[in-house]
Length: 281
Image (tube, rainbow, N blue to C red; front, side, top):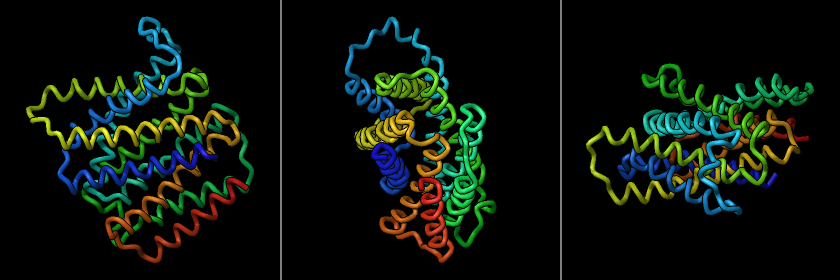
């Protein structure tokens, strides 16, 4: 449970960091590239055994890491755009409503069983996520609705692939190595894309990217560790993780960025607490 708690904390900080990027005029593309190389370095030095580069591509999870890295660089950019153009709350709801995708695949791929109480908890969780970030203007009327939609779809696919690859191919002692390689490949892809842009590199973008990379690495590694404990099903873990992140980012948005909270937002947080209790008890 402690791994899940840390995953929630670091994942919530991601949205806050992205919001601060726009406040301090950080070049998002540069910061994201630096972020992935930073995350790779953290993962590389966290791995206990020596890494054999020649046999790395022969790992059963390498192809999955390649797919994940391409999704990471794409969806991370979408997450940044959604946080900046639509707000932290909308980015949170778009990314975390995607729990329906890994939950459905979890039931199908791993024959996970859900009783009525837990199904009710998941349904309430979806309602809670929506209510927690709902403002006076409906999300569907936002002119940048394409960003939340892409974030919803991409986040769901990423969560599903992470669980599948971790469950089928990655051993517990390779979690840090697997994460590091995913980040390295994502960084290389981002660097390749950056070559087509004529923008000067700024030190503040490098520093911001390094901070983002540390937060990003631990948000993933703690999620992988919580999935590896097998104390709860993936449906329960993803639901608790995503709902708690929405609750925390909503409250942080209120405290840090003075985002206005409505009665329906507080109702959503109350329902979220009930849904977590239904799922975990």
